[in-house]
Length: 380
Image (tube, rainbow, N blue to C red):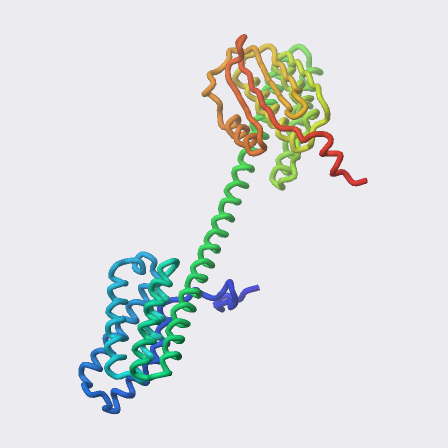
């Protein structure tokens, strides 16, 4: 467990490089500073101003390199060009320790250059460093050119890798946030469907119990017992939905639909055909049955509701039709919208709207895995 107040080291705890990490490399120019202090320069005032200008420009460039907007601006490139001019002038005039400013220029160039532009900047810089060093230092030009090349390329590679790591971390955080949002959406849909249906059934059965109580107390008590059973079942389903393990059974949901419709005085007609379905497909169709029956109980004013499960070998179709007053195609609430999104994720579709002969109809279709492929993956 990480202790509060202590920094965690390693790939996750180390901060990204910044402008401060580039400043210590200026110590490479201490030889030129020592040369100036010892009075070996023929024009100490101009040389001192040149060194001061180079160091100031170097600090400005490397700090701007870690801000993408500033790094790509024209000002940064003008500053880099000024550094190149000063380095070229000092190298040609004095040689010796002043040639080490070419690798420093390579560091600055590598910090601001990315992609295809990198070779276009680095190679001319290395050639220039080699020519100037060759004139002033003979065979030592190889070391100067090599140092310039390595400084620029390694700096550019490290900083590009650092930016990639930061982008990957940002992407990972975004994916985690998206996963949390999707889980919240799934949870809200489940609760909407569970509570909406359950409360509708409780209201219908409570009304039935109130109507039956004056003339048939036993039938009214039976409705009250059903309310208790529905409430207990709803508690179980909510717990399962919270833990993410709920998989609806289509047969169980159809039985509940029959009971709820009958209690509301709506004649249920249920027809089911075709081969057994996978649990994931049954779970999705169960949600459709639950939401469709809930809508019929709440809004339809129907006297008959037909639930038909069937379809082709490669697709299963569920149709729920009532003979109520109907609704417009665009009046679907959040429940149907959530079901439509959920079925679309599984490769299915959900259509809702007025039925041809009046009333309201909801049609859901889902792909079915071929029986042969299911048998092929089963262990012997």
